[in-house]
Length: 189
Image (cartoon, rainbow, N blue to C red; front, side, top):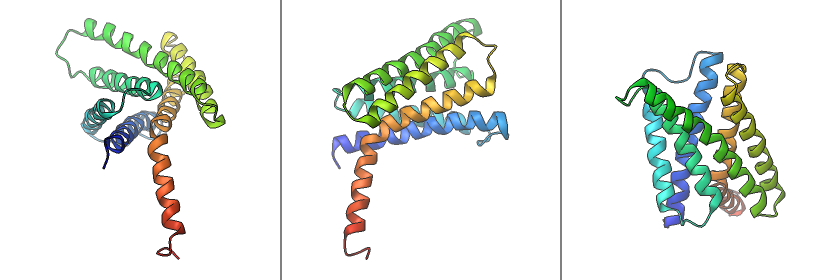
């Protein structure tokens, strides 16, 4: 297994973990939640570890991967610190969380712009426009807390899912090519 493959698998696992945390937020507001006890904290820490490994082992040239990974890592930090893991006073934590919560959608907007402008493929351009639109809505929701909470959480989930697609695109391409080779081989027929 090559270094690039390990990096892509780590990014895939970490981004799916963050997406599951966002899905848990939506489920908690609608049907009562997916996880019990301290499971969200464990998933958040495991996702942060996987994203960190993926970021450290990737070959730094891809701006979309770096910005998307940073956005997801900051999102995990907001979740972990928001659950009171730090022993710092609440007012210091609230300022720190506010800055991080405002930085995450801005990074998603930057990732969307980079994704839309780096390649000429139509799918990346559509994904980039979706990220920019969702990031702006998420940022606006952070500034206006009177917005409906469920709508805000759904926007957050959609943005994290789009960043997950963005980070999983290279690994997904490899999985699809392996499945196509397997399907076309004589072993399946």
